[in-house]
Length: 228
Image 1 (cartoon, rainbow, N blue to C red):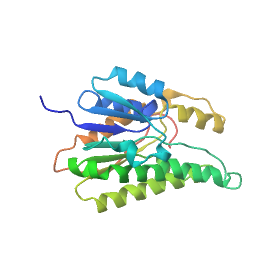
Image 2: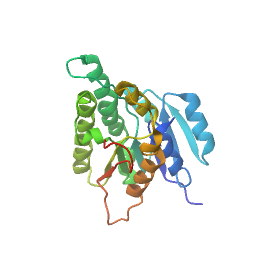
Image 3: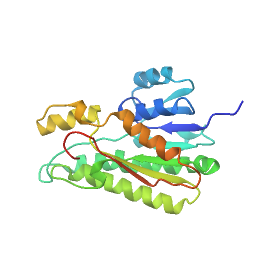
Image 4: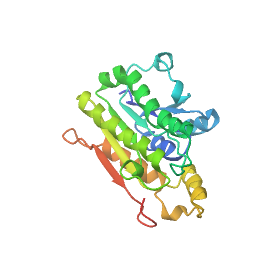
């Protein structure tokens, strides 16, 4: 029996990360990264071959990834957002978003590069429409997502044997979007947003491209609702 390829998905306890994990479940051994152990266990129980990996991504060490010898897919889906005007947002908010959305991504990738190189693997960064355009009240979050794009672009050029894809979803029906709409003073209307499963299908499209095709960037926007 052929061994399943291995995929590690961060932010896998809910939202886009959980949807990506479920999409990969039929074909991959899935390592579910995140902080919520109970939620990770619930997602793992749905899949034929998965295990939770409870971890604080900003504190990952070599010991945490010691058992990963070969990694075919690494999906960075974890992220945080805090909105506010530049005049009002303190330094710790900027630092937190940079730490989670960029530095943790870079460090986990660095630690897993030997395993990714062995598999000639694929790294997917789930970015945001804010990684393409910055709007008022979104400066700190957008800065972290522009930095994530820069990381992915540089990784693609440095690691020629790997594939690196950035996915830019617009507004998506997740817990984060609940918080965004609360800040904006508007209703949460999931029918106007992308479904997490639709973002997961975009990730699969990149992963399943033929050997002659390297999908470097994919942009998704809701078919209904405001642009994002």
